[in-house]
Length: 102
Image (cartoon, rainbow, N blue to C red; front, side, top):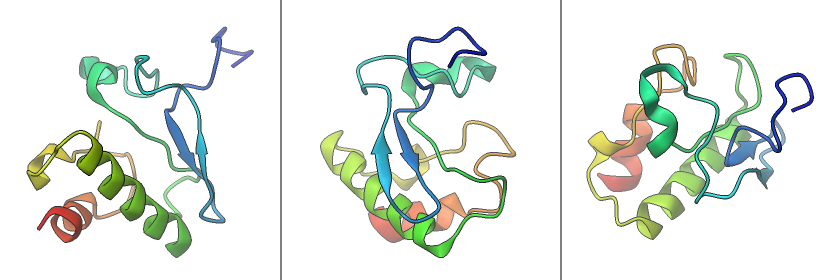
């Protein structure tokens, strides 16, 4: 935050390596993690790690995604997307979306 001059963390949620989900920026504020393509306006994110996520993180991601999809009435698995090719790394987000929204 200091380095970038932000008032708060860029992510709405952060999924730590031990599976804990921490709340960051409020959902009603635009994030600062997906600048490319203007996706900050409609994305929520944050996994801690660089392409080596733990199984605990993936399980927490599934739970968080299911909760957010229910909260925002998202029923189409195609609405759960990456904000760019490299994030969140090797996580099969499409498969997770199918699992939770099938």
